[in-house]
Structure formats: structure tokens, C-alpha cells
Image (cartoon, rainbow, N blue to C red; front, side, top):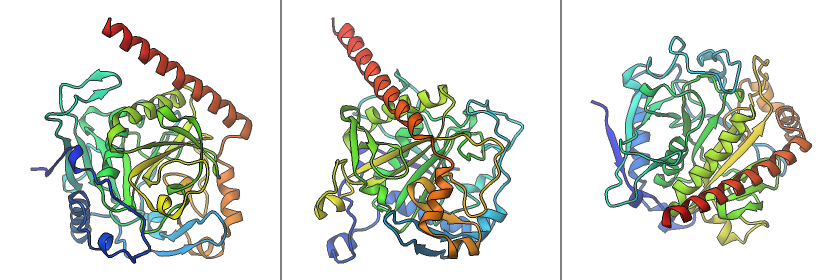
Length: 380
């Protein structure tokens, strides 16, 4: 019988901070049950030999330069991971004949996430009230890039293709809020952005290093929707939410990713604890706060059948400045300039990005007006 992890909004951890290790109150805080459940289940599967390779402590270095790239050497993932499926379109349909998460070893499942909404507001999916509970299956990634690397698969039997839904985004955000570890991250690759399996899934893992995305300055675009533009390389968008606004922000993010899918624009998402948005560098107290979740959305050039880079692929976490290297030579010799050169090849041209920024801002404003009109009509 699969373990069920039942949670509610009361389980969200709202007082997470980045510390230098000198705060005894924070250091003594016990880990959240979400973290202990994932870590124990993941370690158990590793000890039972369910992974394609043993993952020990990864060799890690911070590249010199202002961007603070976190480089890690993970040769076995580049060699041992399952061969990616052939992807020809961002809107490619699910194919039951190809590998999917209904074909895994059942022992790879750690637990199912179920939200207890008793006494709370009903859940919604794309504007429709949910009467049946949605489940999120959490399983180990047998080709891990870091400790605790797992996959979040919304009800695998429904066979969703790799296109985000507001439910998947919401549970991704909630997973970060359930963790008391500021190093827990969640990510997503669309088709055409190095997703290797066309069966809806997000990634989650632990990285015990601070990333600049956690506190990067932003420019407000539509702050009432939680929508901002990142003010540093690489160009992208940012949403921010604390525990009270998760469902609303998840819907806004889904409106953006739906727009990208309709426009055949590949994209990556990266979710992490972070400080509240600001158009300037905050003071130390504000910078250390990790009360909420930052969700970065990077539109990018689609890659179909493209030759992989020898050093690292620009996929799940590289745009967030976490770089899992596939070979020792590149890991040891690459410079920040070399990393930027590789990543730049996968980004939209500046003019295309600015046009997309205007289109998305107008799109979200139009949807906001429609929501207001529908609400006013319902109240009449």
C-alpha cells in the first residue's frame, strides 16, 4: 500500500530564513515532516539499489564572478540516465507505447500527496471546482542530479502530456512551502526545453547552496498578479507568493505557460524559497527572509533533436545557475564567461523577449478584467 502524505495549509512553514549558521534558534529547529518523509524514503530506495547509480557527495565549486554559478560534477547522470524520448513538438500528445511513469517499479514511489481541504475553500482547476481529490505521486528519480531528487507526477493514470496545469503548479509551490529547508527546489522542463519524458512531471531536489535567484532584483510588470521581470541574466519572468495566495498565483502562472504553449515557445520553471520582490537589493534582514516562494519562468528557444552540449545541458536548473557537469575537464576549466556563452544560445533574442513581455502583460490584464466582469455578473 502506498504511503499517503496528507497535508493542509496549516502545515506550511512560514518562517524560513537564510542564515550564516550562527543563529542557534534556526539551527535547532526540527525539520518539517515533508522533508523527513522525502529524505527517509529517498535514502531507503538508494540503499535498496533502485537507482541507476549510487549518488555520493558531489564535487562542488562556485565559479568566480558576479553570477555565483554553483557547479557540480555528476558524470554518472550523463552516462547512466535513460535515453530521452524523441520530441517533435511542444504540444506533442502522450504516447502510451513510450516510457511513462505507469511503467516504473512500484517500489520507486515514496508517497502520494493529498490535500485536506476540510473547512477550507474548494480547490479549482482551470476555473472549475474540483469535486474529486487530485493526487500527486512522488517517486524517486532513478538518475538523480542531487540528494533527494524526486519526481512529482499528477495522477499518472490520467496520462497528461508534459504541459503544466494549475494543479501541478499549485502542488509544486505547496511542496516548497511544506519544506523547512531553503535548499529544497522544484523545477519543470517543457517539451522542447530538454524534457526527456512526455508524461507530466515536475522535479524536486535539495541543493545546499544559495542561488542568486532567491534574492535577485525584479521589475514590476503586474504586481497585483504577482508578475515581475527578472533584472539580471538570463532574461525571464518571476512570480512570487506567500502561503495565502498560492492558488491565485498558480492560476496566473498557468495562464502564462498556456500562452507559451499556444505560441509554441519552450520554457523552464524553477521554484525556490526566496525573499519578497524588490526593484533594488534589499537590506540584510529582507535578503535573508525566505517566507515565500519565487517562481521563475524562462521562455527559450525550442530544441528538437538538438545536439547536447558536452559540458551541461540547459535544462532543469541551469538557468537558475545550478550547473550539473557531465565531465571533469569542463567542470574544472570552464569560466563564468564560458557558461554565459553556452546559455545565451538557448535564450530568445532581446527583441522577441521584449515583445513577449508586452504580450504576456496585456494577456494577464485582459484575463484580470474578464475575471472581474464574471464576478460582478455572478453577484448581480
